[in-house]
Length: 211
Image 1 (cartoon, one colour):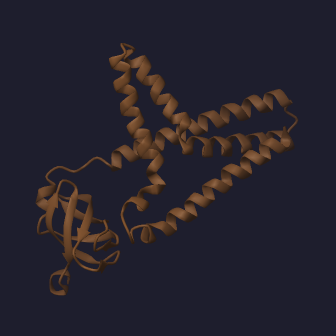
Image 2: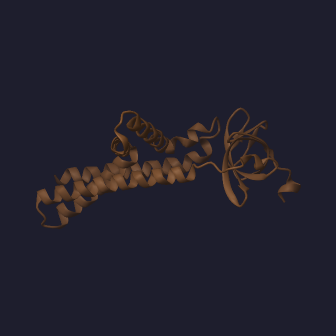
Image 3: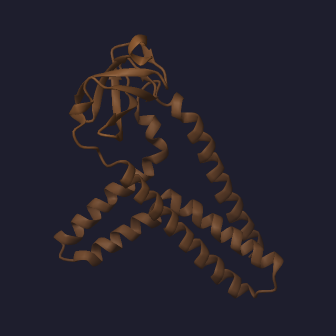
């Protein structure tokens, strides 16, 4: 079993490192054509959130109530990519340490590694989902953004969609953004011209206003 623990540790750590590296590089490049690629790193979290809603709805309609919704929610946790990444990490790390550095029996090592992997995977998946739900709650009164000066988070291009951050009633609000200008880079100031739902039409902020 020893090689399997090492294999799980290497796979989990490798995938996690790849996601971290790709995530850090995609913040700017992914928005050159559209905002959708910039959300790829969170695609599984979004899918989890939608799956939760459908599972809960299906549970009530079928008469299963909270038990069915709970089962559906648990299933979506297990099917998420983050579950398997952190499950492999915990399973591989605990199994490798117990197998090569202690005299614990093979059965006890396997059980401990399996429990650690399952707990870590479920905990990480649930934590990321809760964080995603908290950060994606739309702020009220986005219409108040009109005329406000914000900062570009994801570059805005003509025909594409970026992202900007503004302050409304002391609260930071992130909005999808479109512009008629050729390109507005990350970190530049913009003026919100109009807001349609959660999509703002922006233009580059004049230097005298930004300063």
